[in-house]
View 1 (tube, one colour):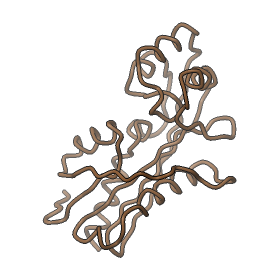
View 2: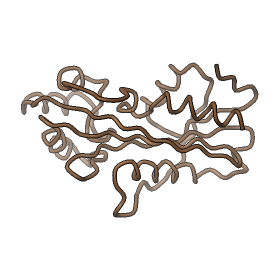
View 3: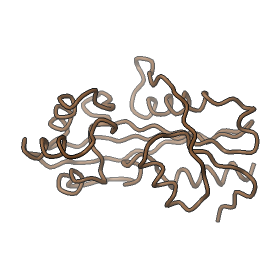
Length: 194
């Protein structure tokens, strides 16, 4: 088991899914979000992109601010046809992304950074998700009744589209939700042993 003692665990994410997953992990934590311009250099691919963004989010906190606490930052991307599918800018782009993912397999990468004063643990996870062929009506129903704009690739596996559209997942389900909990747990164990 992990015992934080007097160490404070901070999740630096506004994602309600990450907050729910951390709650389910059973460790006390607080949430503190800093505004970061989430851009990455051209040429980065696959897990390099979310790792760069997780590091960027972590850098918004100074070492002095981390005294007595562990900071957790994370980022998730969808990789398909040789490119990153981030959060859609509008509902039309969400529709385009879902039609692109329909009937094919894509990769989901989530990277995490756990940081204390003087120590960091970086890790990432990969899951492969296969959608069956989605009808126009199904895509429209999802886009109209759910919130695709705050999700990489325009979908949440834990929502209706995941229930009816996903044929297969290889890898960690929670990674697709946005936080590979076993990686977080392992990283916390490393940092608390430092």
